[in-house]
Structures are given as structure tokens and as C-alpha cells.
Length: 303
Image (cartoon, rainbow, N blue to C red; front, side):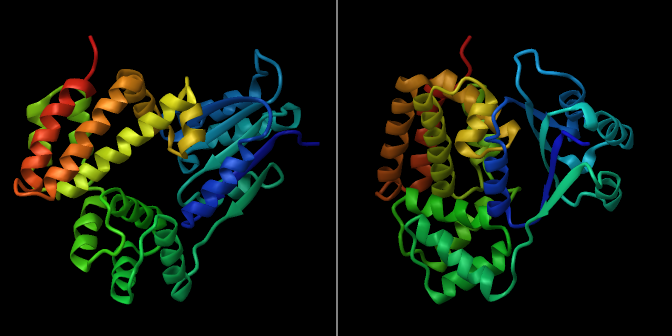
């Protein structure tokens, strides 16, 4: 008899997968996180092999399960009959040998995204949920540029809503879609702010759409504020609250601790002023530069 509960989640319908994952992780027990990309599955093995010191089942959220090693798959199978752990494993393109090896131990749940008209309808639903109205041309543009990546669609629509645009033009969409590409996301800007390096933050923003950077910063500050208000104390708390992956959850928690309630208010005031200035005579580039100067005083690492 196999007591362990091991779920393998994969697929490109990221929203449906995230909902299922969140529901499975609500199982009562001691929550922890593991990442096979970092340890080859050692954390998952530990959850199955070792009884929790705090009592109750170990409930482990496992990322990048496609990177699990053959040795650790074998160890999971060997320990499964005597373990009451719950492993919720998420992975991209999990190899057939992994699912075959875990037959009888794991329950595989796939979340493929529909094609064609179904995707266009989902794009409209996502936009509507964010308070954004899309015309035919705008919807077509999002479908063509974002494809099945509904998280990217949601990011673009959230940014539009943040800067007060409910009926975007195609030009506005293109600017924000560009900033949602991996190469265009202003992570270097926030990394520099984390270090209190104003010059590096200004340099990282060169060539990016100013309104897109401002809306991204608004999102980051808003998430930090949510973490502060929810009194989150661990990355797992943040992941559950915001649906972020473990690495991003750690960064959000760290920022929330540096800012605190007063810092969140100060950062939000800076960004609100920048949004107004960006629409005035000074222009968006000057407004962003001023905002980065002012943010570096409240954002950066504390000694």
C-alpha cells in the first residue's frame, strides 16, 4: 500500500495549473518548499523519507520536477510505501521516463491550453477581470504576441489598469507587451534599487518604456504592501498569498521587510506623483528618472 500522495502537474494552461496547485497545497500538514533545479530532487526525497519534527504530514511544493535525478526518483519510490508526505510537483516538459517510473506512486494531472477561438475568449476574460476593454484589433494583437501565455496577458492588462488605461490603443499594447518579454522586464531596475544603486537603476531603465517601468514598480510595491498587511513571515506564506514562485516570493518578502508600512506608503506616493508627471509637460522619461532617484532613498538595502 502506498501512503504518499504525489501529484505531477504540467501543462501550458498556467492559470488552471496554479489553481489546482494552490488547492492541493491546502492539505493540512507542515508546509515546505523544494526546487529540483537546485538540488536534483533531494528536498523532495527528504520530505518523503523523513518524518516531520513538528508532527503531521510534510506537505512539499516542488518546483522544476523535470530536473529530478534518476537516483532521487528511485529513492522516492522506495520510501513511498511508508510515507504520508504530500508532494505537489510542478514541471515543464516532464520526461516520459519520470512519469513511467512513478506509475503507481504519482497521480499525473495535465493542463493543456485550448487553441484558436478558445484562447481569444480567454484573453477577453483576463482583460475584463483587470478592468480593460479590448476591441477586435487589440484582442488579435494580444493573441498574436502573447499566444497561450495568459500570465503575460494578465501582466499587460494589469499594467494598463494601473496607469488608468481601460481602452488601450494598439501602440500602448505594443509598448507594454515589449516590457513583458523576459528581455524587457525591468528586473535590473529593481535589482539596482534593492542595492540602493541609483545610477545603475537609471542605466537599467534606458531603452525601456517609462510607463511600463512605472507600472511594473507599482505592481512590485503593491505586492510588498499585501505581504506587509498579511503579516507574512516566510516565502511559503508569500507564495500562497500571491501565487508567486519561490524565488520571486523571497524577493517580495525581503522588500516588504525593508519597506514596512511607512516605506510602502512613501514608495506609493512617489509612484503616484510620477504617474501624474508622466502625463504632463515634463514627459514620462523625466518622471521615471525622478521617481528612481526618490525611490532609491526608501527602497534600498538597510545596513
